[in-house]
Image 1 (spheres, rainbow, N blue to C red):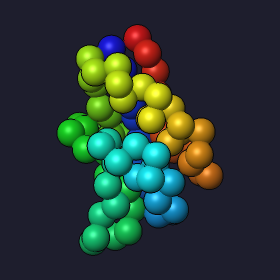
Image 2 (image 1 turned 90 degrees about the vertical axis):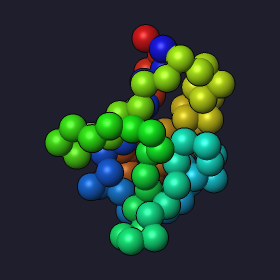
Image 3 (image 1 turned 120 degrees about the vertical axis):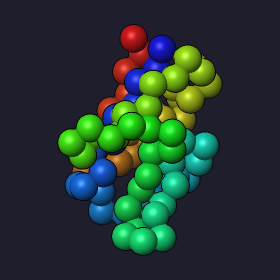
Length: 76
């Protein structure tokens, strides 16, 4: 299982995650911050749990590219 976590309140809106993993991330038109699609919110931490291992590589690349290090990706 792939677990992707986003700390959305610290997002600066650079758009790297959307460019590298467009099927998992979108930019919000309301506040210019990223949205982790199909995630659940728990106190500002948005988490996506998926059995689709095809998202592992793009999400990992998005995590590495994030200048504020608010994306974590785990293969559990």
